[in-house]
Image (cartoon, rainbow, N blue to C red; front, side, top):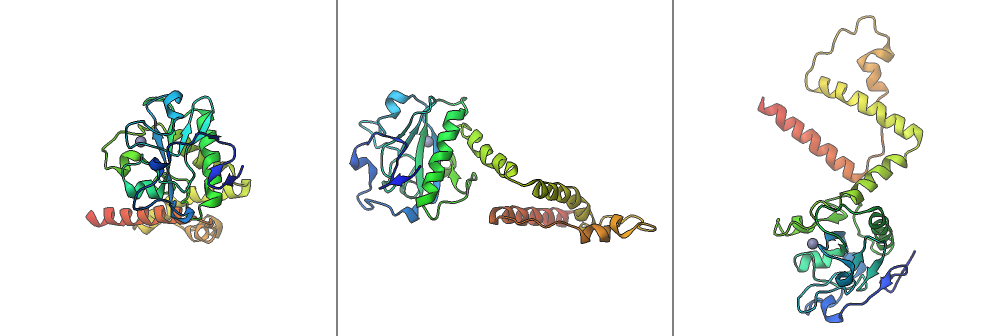
Length: 243
Ligand SMILES: [Zn+2]
């Protein structure tokens, strides 16, 4: 699995017309400009997808991800294809059309292909964001303020596969730490909100609130987790100020 001159070495190479892979004002992008992947719902099938463009229209895309596991590449990663709603998102995003129609979540072959594509792109795109919706994955509907329903919720098995992998990749110790933290956080938040401390008389240190604070495990949090935590704390604060 490697990328050679902007082409994934395992993808079926099916080039689209060169003029649909560039803007007159921006003929080519640097790998450092690629920030995310836009997974589209093709609302169609392999015979037209494999062309990589719509004849007679300003429409082209970089990858075609088919339900039988065939995976096509039509343009090198440096090309700006026309499918994600406008110049900025066509420059910042790698576009992948997914065979099938609304109501058909990506199947296992499509999820595997997409993960392989994302892993390869990450080796050459230094600024590709983390594989989370809203960061390293964006959606056509969101990028166009709802002007399209694409991708109609079809991509969720791919997003979920990354969240699941994170939990599976933990050691037993890391998982136990996470579970302990999950149990203790509500108690501590309760206190921070001015909740009743409860009678601590006669409790050993280990069972007391103080003791629990002592043993609050720490986790290495990603930037994304920290942002979520900060949002939670802010929202919670705003909520309490209302009362
Ligand atoms: Zn789309």
